[in-house]
Length: 279
View 1 (cartoon, rainbow, N blue to C red):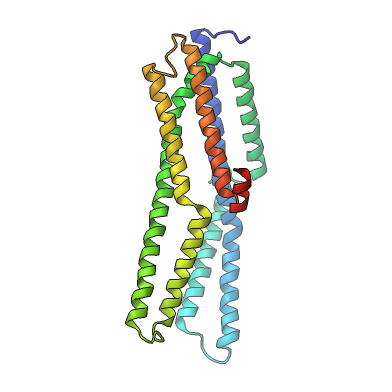
View 2 (view 1 turned 90 degrees about the vertical axis):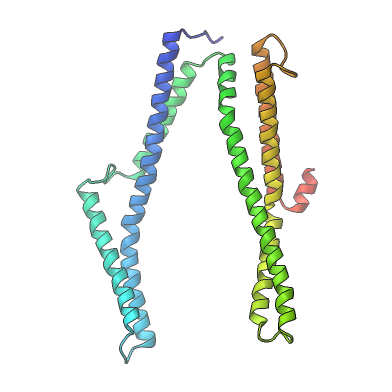
């Protein structure tokens, strides 16, 4: 059975865990920056070569026996010049170690991140707090989870509204253009474009289902908030005098709500026939 920690031991453990999390976050940021540096080191020379090859291909294909237009010459030369400057600057920063992780393989940084994560897990297991403390901590993390759910819900709701308004406008535009041009030969291209837009939006709305995703996310966030408020006020189903029992029931209920949300997301990602079989 886990022994309760004293106040000084708990503070020391908390500081150690926070330090591990800072180390992990720092390594994740360094890996992200190093990946961009590597992409730049390998990508800018390719841009230089591509710009020169493009100029040669255009010259041979269209202007073999005449002068190339100034726009083509200027565009290709500027692209090659600025990419070449970027190559020189990046190589100087790499070999003179102006960057924090210059000349450091990504594999080494990923290994350091894996080891830091392992140390954090072992430290957390070595000083595991009692279940009641973990449940109380779980409760304090829920506002951020509810905020995330509502943010995603607003995103999908806005996507759904945008798709619906585009459908309204394009559908009305098809009728308006057809009525305006009779016969519709001068506006044939516009009608084709509008019909294509309607088809794409309808297919995208049916595939991604933003309205259903927004509804599910908002429903889960509201349910979690309802249980959190009930626990805070001490009302049913969290009216028992034993606070540890209330926290245990609260954590179990919220995890069940989150599991239902994940199941609904999986059902939305499946084809219609697969959804019917799951249901």
